[in-house]
Length: 319
Image (cartoon, rainbow, N blue to C red; front, top):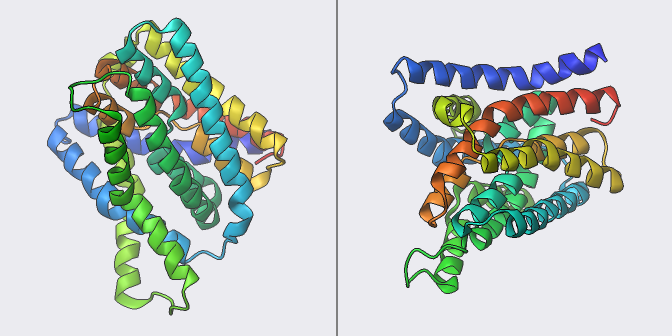
Protein backbone atom coordinates (compact mmCIF):
# COMPACT_ATOMS: atom_id res chain seq x y z
CA UNK A 1 0.00 0.00 0.00
CA UNK A 2 2.95 2.32 0.67
CA UNK A 3 4.02 1.90 -2.96
CA UNK A 4 0.51 2.84 -4.10
CA UNK A 5 0.52 6.00 -1.99
CA UNK A 6 3.97 6.98 -3.29
CA UNK A 7 2.72 6.38 -6.86
CA UNK A 8 -0.30 8.64 -6.30
CA UNK A 9 1.81 11.40 -4.76
CA UNK A 10 4.33 11.14 -7.59
CA UNK A 11 1.76 11.66 -10.33
CA UNK A 12 -0.26 14.41 -8.62
CA UNK A 13 2.27 16.43 -6.59
CA UNK A 14 4.21 17.87 -9.58
CA UNK A 15 0.93 19.20 -11.01
CA UNK A 16 -0.06 20.74 -7.68
CA UNK A 17 3.41 22.27 -7.31
CA UNK A 18 3.18 23.99 -10.71
CA UNK A 19 -0.37 25.19 -9.98
CA UNK A 20 0.82 26.54 -6.63
CA UNK A 21 3.64 28.37 -8.43
CA UNK A 22 1.08 29.99 -10.74
CA UNK A 23 -1.09 31.00 -7.78
CA UNK A 24 1.99 32.39 -5.97
CA UNK A 25 2.97 34.41 -9.04
CA UNK A 26 -0.56 35.77 -9.35
CA UNK A 27 -0.61 36.84 -5.68
CA UNK A 28 2.74 38.62 -6.15
CA UNK A 29 1.48 40.43 -9.23
CA UNK A 30 3.87 38.52 -11.49
CA UNK A 31 1.09 36.80 -13.46
CA UNK A 32 -1.46 39.32 -14.68
CA UNK A 33 -4.70 38.41 -16.42
CA UNK A 34 -3.09 39.47 -19.69
CA UNK A 35 -0.21 37.05 -19.07
CA UNK A 36 -2.66 34.24 -18.25
CA UNK A 37 -4.79 34.88 -21.34
CA UNK A 38 -1.84 35.17 -23.72
CA UNK A 39 -0.01 32.17 -22.26
CA UNK A 40 -3.13 30.02 -22.33
CA UNK A 41 -3.70 30.97 -25.96
CA UNK A 42 -0.06 30.15 -26.79
CA UNK A 43 -0.35 26.74 -25.12
CA UNK A 44 -3.67 25.90 -26.76
CA UNK A 45 -2.77 27.00 -30.28
CA UNK A 46 0.89 25.93 -30.53
CA UNK A 47 2.35 23.92 -27.63
CA UNK A 48 -0.40 21.37 -26.97
CA UNK A 49 -0.88 20.61 -30.69
CA UNK A 50 2.86 19.88 -30.95
CA UNK A 51 2.72 17.69 -27.85
CA UNK A 52 -0.22 15.67 -29.20
CA UNK A 53 1.13 15.43 -32.75
CA UNK A 54 4.59 14.18 -31.83
CA UNK A 55 3.37 11.91 -29.03
CA UNK A 56 1.23 10.08 -31.60
CA UNK A 57 3.75 10.16 -34.47
CA UNK A 58 6.61 8.89 -32.30
CA UNK A 59 4.65 6.20 -30.47
CA UNK A 60 4.53 2.48 -31.19
CA UNK A 61 1.09 2.13 -29.62
CA UNK A 62 -1.38 -0.10 -31.46
CA UNK A 63 -4.32 2.26 -31.72
CA UNK A 64 -6.69 -0.53 -32.77
CA UNK A 65 -6.34 -1.82 -29.20
CA UNK A 66 -7.61 1.50 -27.82
CA UNK A 67 -11.12 1.02 -29.24
CA UNK A 68 -12.47 -0.49 -26.02
CA UNK A 69 -11.00 2.35 -23.95
CA UNK A 70 -12.53 4.97 -26.26
CA UNK A 71 -15.93 3.24 -26.24
CA UNK A 72 -15.83 3.11 -22.45
CA UNK A 73 -14.95 6.82 -22.33
CA UNK A 74 -17.87 7.67 -24.61
CA UNK A 75 -20.25 5.55 -22.52
CA UNK A 76 -19.05 7.12 -19.26
CA UNK A 77 -19.54 10.59 -20.74
CA UNK A 78 -23.10 9.79 -21.80
CA UNK A 79 -23.93 8.28 -18.40
CA UNK A 80 -22.67 11.38 -16.60
CA UNK A 81 -24.40 13.72 -19.06
CA UNK A 82 -27.78 11.98 -18.91
CA UNK A 83 -27.60 11.55 -15.13
CA UNK A 84 -26.74 15.22 -14.63
CA UNK A 85 -29.53 16.26 -17.02
CA UNK A 86 -32.11 14.26 -15.08
CA UNK A 87 -30.85 15.68 -11.78
CA UNK A 88 -30.80 19.25 -13.13
CA UNK A 89 -34.35 19.07 -14.51
CA UNK A 90 -35.61 17.86 -11.15
CA UNK A 91 -33.58 19.87 -8.64
CA UNK A 92 -32.18 22.92 -10.48
CA UNK A 93 -34.82 25.57 -11.09
CA UNK A 94 -33.21 28.29 -13.22
CA UNK A 95 -32.53 27.45 -16.90
CA UNK A 96 -29.27 29.46 -16.86
CA UNK A 97 -28.04 27.26 -13.99
CA UNK A 98 -29.07 23.89 -15.41
CA UNK A 99 -26.68 23.72 -18.35
CA UNK A 100 -23.77 25.03 -16.29
CA UNK A 101 -24.44 22.37 -13.63
CA UNK A 102 -24.59 19.58 -16.22
CA UNK A 103 -21.40 20.73 -17.94
CA UNK A 104 -19.61 20.98 -14.59
CA UNK A 105 -20.38 17.31 -13.92
CA UNK A 106 -19.55 15.62 -17.23
CA UNK A 107 -16.78 17.80 -18.72
CA UNK A 108 -13.29 17.15 -17.33
CA UNK A 109 -10.01 18.98 -17.89
CA UNK A 110 -8.39 16.29 -20.05
CA UNK A 111 -6.16 18.52 -22.16
CA UNK A 112 -4.18 19.97 -19.26
CA UNK A 113 -4.52 18.19 -15.92
CA UNK A 114 -5.61 14.85 -17.37
CA UNK A 115 -2.75 14.61 -19.87
CA UNK A 116 -0.19 15.92 -17.38
CA UNK A 117 -1.17 13.33 -14.78
CA UNK A 118 -1.22 10.51 -17.32
CA UNK A 119 2.25 11.55 -18.52
CA UNK A 120 3.52 11.53 -14.93
CA UNK A 121 2.03 8.07 -14.36
CA UNK A 122 2.86 6.21 -17.57
CA UNK A 123 5.33 8.30 -19.58
CA UNK A 124 5.20 8.46 -23.38
CA UNK A 125 3.08 5.31 -23.75
CA UNK A 126 0.34 6.68 -21.51
CA UNK A 127 0.61 10.11 -23.15
CA UNK A 128 0.00 8.60 -26.61
CA UNK A 129 -3.01 6.61 -25.41
CA UNK A 130 -4.34 9.62 -23.50
CA UNK A 131 -3.96 11.86 -26.56
CA UNK A 132 -6.10 9.54 -28.71
CA UNK A 133 -8.72 9.22 -25.96
CA UNK A 134 -8.82 12.98 -25.50
CA UNK A 135 -9.15 13.66 -29.22
CA UNK A 136 -12.29 11.56 -29.56
CA UNK A 137 -13.97 12.47 -26.27
CA UNK A 138 -13.25 16.20 -26.72
CA UNK A 139 -15.49 16.20 -29.79
CA UNK A 140 -18.29 14.65 -27.74
CA UNK A 141 -17.71 17.14 -24.91
CA UNK A 142 -18.21 20.10 -27.24
CA UNK A 143 -21.38 18.70 -28.79
CA UNK A 144 -22.97 17.87 -25.43
CA UNK A 145 -21.94 21.24 -23.97
CA UNK A 146 -23.75 23.11 -26.75
CA UNK A 147 -26.85 20.93 -26.26
CA UNK A 148 -27.07 21.46 -22.50
CA UNK A 149 -26.25 25.19 -22.59
CA UNK A 150 -28.84 25.83 -25.29
CA UNK A 151 -31.59 26.19 -22.69
CA UNK A 152 -30.75 29.89 -22.57
CA UNK A 153 -31.14 31.91 -25.74
CA UNK A 154 -29.42 35.29 -25.70
CA UNK A 155 -31.07 36.65 -28.83
CA UNK A 156 -33.47 35.88 -31.66
CA UNK A 157 -30.48 34.95 -33.83
CA UNK A 158 -29.41 32.27 -31.34
CA UNK A 159 -31.05 29.22 -32.90
CA UNK A 160 -30.27 25.51 -33.21
CA UNK A 161 -28.91 26.18 -36.69
CA UNK A 162 -26.53 28.87 -35.45
CA UNK A 163 -25.47 26.70 -32.52
CA UNK A 164 -24.87 23.71 -34.79
CA UNK A 165 -22.85 25.89 -37.16
CA UNK A 166 -20.82 27.18 -34.22
CA UNK A 167 -19.99 23.70 -32.90
CA UNK A 168 -19.02 22.40 -36.36
CA UNK A 169 -16.79 25.43 -36.85
CA UNK A 170 -15.20 24.90 -33.44
CA UNK A 171 -14.52 21.24 -34.18
CA UNK A 172 -12.94 21.88 -37.58
CA UNK A 173 -10.79 24.75 -36.30
CA UNK A 174 -9.77 23.19 -32.97
CA UNK A 175 -5.93 23.01 -32.99
CA UNK A 176 -5.88 19.91 -30.78
CA UNK A 177 -8.22 17.94 -33.00
CA UNK A 178 -6.38 19.10 -36.14
CA UNK A 179 -3.05 18.01 -34.61
CA UNK A 180 -4.40 14.55 -33.78
CA UNK A 181 -5.97 14.07 -37.21
CA UNK A 182 -2.73 15.21 -38.84
CA UNK A 183 -0.74 12.75 -36.73
CA UNK A 184 -2.99 9.82 -37.62
CA UNK A 185 -2.80 10.68 -41.32
CA UNK A 186 0.99 11.00 -41.16
CA UNK A 187 1.33 7.59 -39.50
CA UNK A 188 -1.06 6.00 -41.99
CA UNK A 189 0.89 7.23 -45.02
CA UNK A 190 4.28 5.78 -46.09
CA UNK A 191 6.15 8.93 -45.07
CA UNK A 192 9.68 9.12 -43.62
CA UNK A 193 10.09 9.77 -39.88
CA UNK A 194 10.26 13.39 -38.77
CA UNK A 195 13.79 14.23 -37.65
CA UNK A 196 16.21 17.11 -37.39
CA UNK A 197 15.13 20.72 -36.95
CA UNK A 198 11.40 20.02 -37.32
CA UNK A 199 11.33 17.39 -34.59
CA UNK A 200 13.63 19.36 -32.29
CA UNK A 201 11.46 22.47 -32.60
CA UNK A 202 8.33 20.41 -32.01
CA UNK A 203 9.89 18.81 -28.92
CA UNK A 204 10.80 22.21 -27.49
CA UNK A 205 7.27 23.53 -27.95
CA UNK A 206 5.78 20.31 -26.59
CA UNK A 207 7.96 20.54 -23.48
CA UNK A 208 6.46 23.94 -22.69
CA UNK A 209 2.82 22.82 -22.99
CA UNK A 210 1.90 21.11 -19.74
CA UNK A 211 4.08 23.11 -17.29
CA UNK A 212 2.90 26.48 -18.64
CA UNK A 213 -0.72 25.30 -18.79
CA UNK A 214 -0.61 24.19 -15.14
CA UNK A 215 0.98 27.49 -14.08
CA UNK A 216 -1.81 29.37 -15.85
CA UNK A 217 -4.42 27.14 -14.20
CA UNK A 218 -2.96 27.96 -10.79
CA UNK A 219 -2.78 31.66 -11.56
CA UNK A 220 -6.47 31.59 -12.53
CA UNK A 221 -7.64 30.24 -9.16
CA UNK A 222 -10.02 32.58 -7.36
CA UNK A 223 -9.83 31.91 -3.61
CA UNK A 224 -13.04 33.79 -2.94
CA UNK A 225 -14.96 31.60 -5.38
CA UNK A 226 -13.29 28.44 -4.10
CA UNK A 227 -13.88 29.11 -0.39
CA UNK A 228 -17.46 30.35 -0.78
CA UNK A 229 -19.14 27.85 -3.09
CA UNK A 230 -22.92 27.91 -3.44
CA UNK A 231 -25.02 24.85 -2.69
CA UNK A 232 -25.46 24.22 -6.40
CA UNK A 233 -21.76 24.52 -7.23
CA UNK A 234 -20.98 22.12 -4.37
CA UNK A 235 -23.46 19.60 -5.77
CA UNK A 236 -21.86 19.84 -9.22
CA UNK A 237 -18.40 19.55 -7.65
CA UNK A 238 -19.42 16.36 -5.83
CA UNK A 239 -20.64 15.00 -9.16
CA UNK A 240 -17.28 15.79 -10.79
CA UNK A 241 -14.95 14.80 -7.95
CA UNK A 242 -16.80 11.78 -6.50
CA UNK A 243 -19.51 10.45 -8.82
CA UNK A 244 -17.62 10.72 -12.15
CA UNK A 245 -14.58 8.65 -11.05
CA UNK A 246 -16.83 5.98 -9.49
CA UNK A 247 -18.82 5.69 -12.72
CA UNK A 248 -15.59 5.46 -14.72
CA UNK A 249 -14.21 2.66 -12.55
CA UNK A 250 -17.50 0.73 -12.63
CA UNK A 251 -17.83 0.92 -16.42
CA UNK A 252 -14.13 0.22 -16.92
CA UNK A 253 -14.36 -2.93 -14.81
CA UNK A 254 -17.50 -4.03 -16.65
CA UNK A 255 -15.55 -3.84 -19.93
CA UNK A 256 -12.49 -5.56 -18.48
CA UNK A 257 -10.10 -2.60 -18.51
CA UNK A 258 -6.97 -2.89 -16.41
CA UNK A 259 -3.43 -1.57 -16.05
CA UNK A 260 -2.61 1.43 -18.26
CA UNK A 261 -6.05 1.59 -19.89
CA UNK A 262 -7.86 1.71 -16.55
CA UNK A 263 -5.35 4.27 -15.31
CA UNK A 264 -5.82 6.53 -18.34
CA UNK A 265 -9.62 6.26 -18.07
CA UNK A 266 -9.62 7.09 -14.37
CA UNK A 267 -7.19 10.01 -14.58
CA UNK A 268 -8.98 11.54 -17.59
CA UNK A 269 -12.45 11.24 -16.05
CA UNK A 270 -11.39 12.21 -12.51
CA UNK A 271 -9.76 15.45 -13.67
CA UNK A 272 -11.34 18.72 -12.47
CA UNK A 273 -13.96 20.54 -14.52
CA UNK A 274 -12.55 21.83 -17.82
CA UNK A 275 -11.51 25.48 -18.00
CA UNK A 276 -13.36 25.73 -21.33
CA UNK A 277 -16.63 25.16 -19.47
CA UNK A 278 -16.49 28.69 -18.04
CA UNK A 279 -15.77 30.26 -21.43
CA UNK A 280 -18.59 28.38 -23.15
CA UNK A 281 -21.07 29.04 -20.34
CA UNK A 282 -20.39 32.78 -20.51
CA UNK A 283 -20.59 32.87 -24.31
CA UNK A 284 -23.93 31.04 -24.39
CA UNK A 285 -25.69 32.99 -21.64
CA UNK A 286 -25.27 30.54 -18.76
CA UNK A 287 -24.54 31.47 -15.15
CA UNK A 288 -20.84 32.30 -15.45
CA UNK A 289 -20.47 32.90 -11.70
CA UNK A 290 -21.68 29.37 -11.00
CA UNK A 291 -19.32 28.06 -13.69
CA UNK A 292 -16.37 29.91 -12.08
CA UNK A 293 -17.22 28.51 -8.63
CA UNK A 294 -17.35 24.93 -9.94
CA UNK A 295 -14.11 25.41 -11.86
CA UNK A 296 -12.20 26.88 -8.91
CA UNK A 297 -13.34 24.32 -6.34
CA UNK A 298 -12.83 21.23 -8.49
CA UNK A 299 -9.44 22.42 -9.76
CA UNK A 300 -7.95 22.37 -6.26
CA UNK A 301 -9.96 19.72 -4.41
CA UNK A 302 -10.20 17.40 -7.42
CA UNK A 303 -6.42 16.91 -7.46
CA UNK A 304 -6.56 15.33 -4.00
CA UNK A 305 -9.45 13.14 -5.14
CA UNK A 306 -7.33 11.95 -8.06
CA UNK A 307 -4.49 11.09 -5.67
CA UNK A 308 -6.76 9.10 -3.34
CA UNK A 309 -8.38 7.26 -6.24
CA UNK A 310 -5.05 6.51 -7.92
CA UNK A 311 -3.59 5.17 -4.66
CA UNK A 312 -6.62 2.94 -4.13
CA UNK A 313 -6.60 1.56 -7.68
CA UNK A 314 -2.84 1.05 -7.56
CA UNK A 315 -3.11 -0.76 -4.24
CA UNK A 316 -5.74 -3.08 -5.72
CA UNK A 317 -3.53 -3.72 -8.76
CA UNK A 318 -6.00 -2.12 -11.17
CA UNK A 319 -3.77 0.60 -12.66
